Length: 411
Image (cartoon, rainbow, N blue to C red; front, top):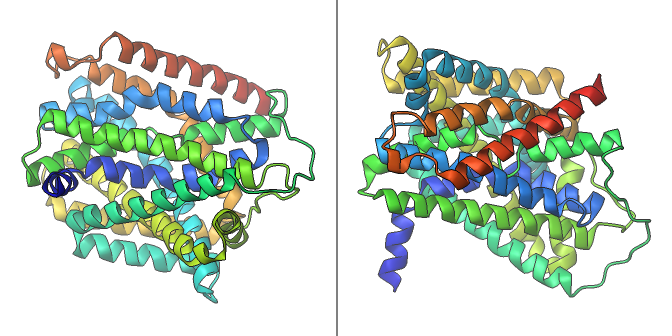
């Protein structure tokens, strides 16, 4: 039994990396806020978003496992225009997304370590550490580090929700019911869906990690998909648990999450201590920080790999993969720092802005993935089936309807 477990951990990788990318801001910030502000009112949204986005995330693992290539190659095969479109959107959004995940990490770091630095300075320090980790340690270190981090936070969250269910919480405030007619509620809904369970950049990241993992270990298509499903179902369950934790401990308590990063960090960690007791604070603090740090690290690695491969696909091998990767690691860090030092209002504003942008481009990303998964580049038996197509088209239609309503509202 122990050998089977060790072998499963050795073969796992992209699914856990996906979990690290997903569990960060979308779960710690947005899911918990959803529960704290609306109780169980948005639970259906979390479940529905995970269900409708499932085919798109599965595509990243399935395409790369079957073809041995990433989704970027698939985009190039259906037309250079598709790859150029994806790269353009990625370039326009990557610095905002990287800034958003980093500022949450910095807020938690400043709170638990009592750093005397500004959020911007701590963010820059974390980005430098992440860049050095990737440039020196690369994929193997990232792969092993993330498995421990995700497991630690998952365990503490399950315990916290379990204890919170049987605990006593004062209910002073009136219930806050979600309403589509309320513009502020709709803005949050769009931000919640945008990164639930993660932005649709991530299937491409997943495909790149899968190709990398398959070069290191002999892993079958079935094992690759099993690894993906484990990561996807696990993160979906965690999204529900974070929402439950916010709903049980904070909803109608008279308190709400602060838009400031450090204050938010203290409130988030206190959710666990309220449920588990003060003994849990050190454990939860470290688990929360390491989770957000792993998200920051994972996003930096993913954006750099996406741009690296895209440049080679579009312009050939004038520069080596290592040179392109190093360039984009540094470029992403510099771009994120410029954004943080010049345009950071509050953590909440930056996170909502980043997640909203991801929602706005969801129909484009989703359409590209559906085209690839039904193209001639895949054997017929590995193309999307009726259920995947039904969920995929349903996801595109749902996001498009909400998008039109949202744009009409802000206009």
